Image 1 (cartoon, rainbow, N blue to C red):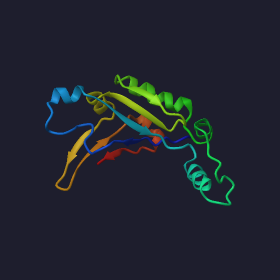
Image 2: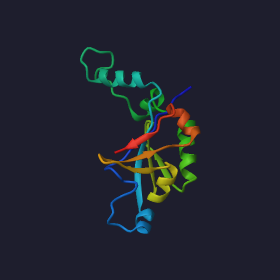
Image 3: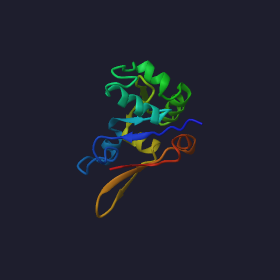
Image 4: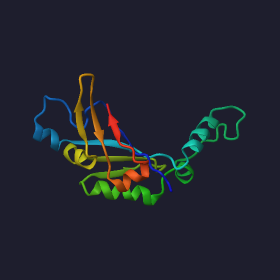
Length: 150
């Protein structure tokens, strides 16, 4: 069974929740984009291939893959990508699949992103972070991992 690890990539802590200076309604309606990074189908093989492209004397030295080569050897299947797209569409979010089938750009309102990722802001004495979670159907594909965005 292919495992999909989706890593929520955000620029800056609190992108989903934002700063205190904006109004709640305007903030929730603001459009933003995030990247969801999917785990390669052969994570170890992908890492090895990348290192071989820059190591003299190895089989793949300076033999870089095209995006379609990455997709066919290491990218997620079209059906897996479509599962993510279908899920995000339910929350009125648009997705763009980058060549290679390893990264999705998800765009929509902050309010819909928060709903889709079940995002919860947690403040401690030390830091503030956002915990996110996808539904079980997608979570199974990432080994049941949830994410913490700091």
